[in-house]
Length: 256
Length: 356
Image (cartoon, rainbow over all chains, first blue to last red; front, side, top):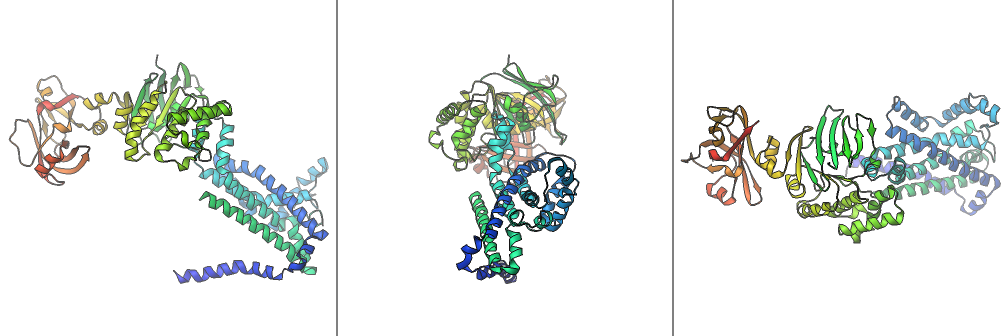
C-alpha cells in the first residue's frame, strides 16, 4: 500500500465528508418540519421542483437529438458544436446568466422581439428560471448520451435492419434501449444540476419570491436572518443529491 | 435461371477493390473461402444491402436488389435476406424468443404470429426451453443456434452466414458443423457461407468460391480445388504443395534453380510457366541420401512439425520447400525432429502439372 498516495486520499475523503457533517450538525431536527413548511420554504421548494423538472424535460428533448447529431453525423464544425455544447458546464454560471440576459432579456436581441410579438418575457418569470436551468443542465444529457451512442455496438443496428426493421424501428427498439441506462444517468445529473442552479438564475431571472426564488436562492437569502431555515432547505437538497447518486450507482452496478 | 445473380464491385476508401461475380441456385450452399482481408465480409454486406455497390448488380429471384446502372438500391430492411453475423449480434435487452420474433415483427407480423414463428424456430434448433433466457446467458453453441434461428425466421429468400462456426470452441464446432448442414437444408433459397476453414466448406457447402484480395481465384468443389489448386493459398488450404516453375529441357526449373521432374512434362504436353502440385502424402522422407527410383530428390531441413488428425505434417525448407505428410510412427522411426536435415523424394508420376 503506497502510503504516499493513501494519506492524501484519506484527506480527500475527509474533505468531501466534513462539510456534510458540519451541515448535519447545524440542523435543528426538532424544528425541521416547521422550517420546511413555512410559506417561503414551500414556495421555494415547489418552484424548484417545477422548474427543474421542466428544465430536465427540455434538456432531454433538445439534448438527445443534439447528442445523436454529434455522435452520428459528420458535418463541418462538429468539433466546434461539441465544444459549444459543453460550454455551460465550465462557464461561470453568473456569466451564463449575463449571456442569457443579453440575448433573452427585455433588451436582448431575441427577448425584445419575443416580448413585442407574443408578450413572452423571461426576466422575473418562472420561464426565465426554466431557461437558465435548461442552459446549465443541457451538457449533462448531451455528454452522456453522445458517449453512449458512440460506445454502443452500431452493428446491432445493422443486424436489426437486415431483419427488416425500418430506421424508426431500429431507433425505437435497438438504439434507444442501448442508450437508456446512460440517458437515465444523464437525466439524473441534469436534474440535480438544474435543481442546484443559482448564478445564472439570479442573474437572468431575478430573485422574486414565488416566481423566481428557487431553493438555492432562498438558502442564500435566508442565511443572514434565518440560518436555521437556510440549513433545513440545504438539507433537502443534500438528500436529493444523495438520492440521485444512489440511483446512478444502482445503474452502474446493474451494468457491470 | 439462377435464384441469385451477383456481380459485385466495391471500392473501399482504403483503396481495396472487390470484384466478384457468381450465381447461386435455390437450395444451394456456396462457401466463400479466403484469407483475412480478402473481402468476404464486404461481399456479404453488399448482398445484404449494408454496403451499396459501386459497380455491377445483384438480382434475387428476378428482382434487382442493387443495380448501379439503373440506380436501383433496396435498403437492407426491404430485402428478403437473412444474415447471421460472425459474433451473432444478438439483442441482449430482448429475450431469445423476442430476438427471433424481431424479424417477423419488423416485417409486419402480429405479435402473436411472430411469437409463434419464434417458438417454431426455437423448436427446430432444439432450444425451446431457452425461449425466455437472455442472450448473454447462452453457451456459445446455443447463441450460434439462436443467431441462425433469427436469420431464418420469416423465411428470407437468401441466407448469408458470416463465419458461423468461428466463435465456437473446437469440440462444439465439430458437431455444430454437421448440424448446420442439416439446419440449412430447411432453407430453400441460395445460402452463402463465408469461412476461412476448408473443412466448413467441405462439410456444409456444395460449391466453393475462393476469394483472394477481392478477386475470385478459383471456384468449384473442394475435391476439384484439392486436385488443381490455383494459388498457393488454395494449395495451403487444401494441403497441396504448389510449386511454380518454368518448363525447360523436359523438367521444371524452380526459382531456386532446383529441377523438378514430372511424368506429365516428360510427355511434352506442356510448356512455359507452370504450377506443379505435389500431394504431401506423395513426399517420402529419409535421413540419408536415398537410393531410390524416385526422380526427384532434394535435401532440406525440418522447419516445423504439426499434427493433423492421425497424420503428421512436416514442413521442410530448402531449395524446394515442401510439406510432407507421414504417420506418427514413421516420424518416430526416422527420428525426425525440427531443425534436422532430411532428404525428400517424390516420384515423377506424383507431380501433376498445369499451366499457370
